[in-house]
Image (tube, rainbow, N blue to C red; front, side, top):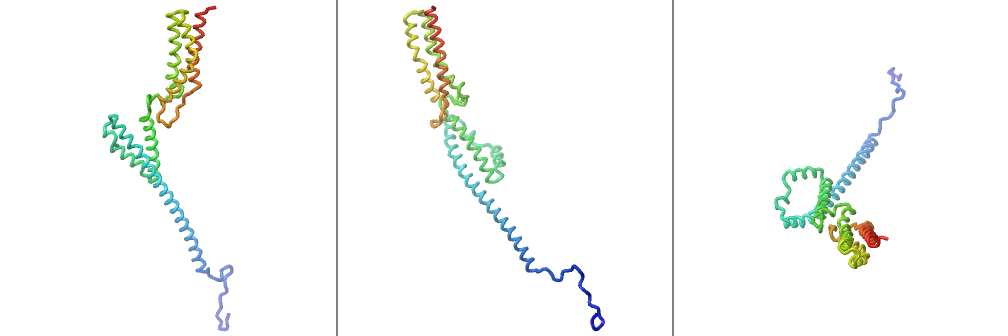
Amino acid sequence: MNGAGTAVPAPRAGRPTSEPDPVAAAWADYVTAARQLDGVRRAATTAASAQARSVAAAREELTAVRERLAPQQSRLRELGVPAISLVPTPPEVTESARTMAGGPAAVLAALRGARNWAETADHTLAARGLPRLARWPARPRNLLVYGPLALLVPLVQVLLFVADGTGPASIAALVFGLPMPAVAFMVGWLAVGRLFRPRAEDRVDRTPRFGALVCLVPAVLTTAGLVLAMFPG
């Protein structure tokens, strides 16, 4: 009590004696907000940069696709394809627009797919000789060239033996046929590259070991059979 008889309340236990500093609290809130803002700004900058790169790449892809499609269109028109068939239909345009609605990244993916299709079309249009056979597996495809060449000389030797027996013509055919497998292989090697090369800069698998075997086996078997028939023992 004070002198006037009025009681003064005593402070409660555990109650802070001072209020929080409002300046420090405001500063902490400011720092937190600034950090959040910086994170948003960095994320926006990264997204903008990625989008800009996608846009630039999409423009490059578009230019490359156009450069491929222009000569293809001219070539197809020369081959008699109607001009209306070279223009996309409204459903195709709608489907393409739906596919590319995801932004620059989706457009870039669609253009890359279009470039792959254009490259495939280039290979087909530029194929010389037998374009469909050029896509066969190498050995069956090359057998169509090596096989007939390998059988040509043995067939002539057999026909001469049937017509002349053991005469001079058959013996000359045997002697003449000894280097013919090598000749057949070289002609086949050149023909495979000529017939099945889609473009001049592409390499063709000529399967040289397989081709040499195909050219050699008929000649060896035919020569051995004829020698045994001419000189039975």
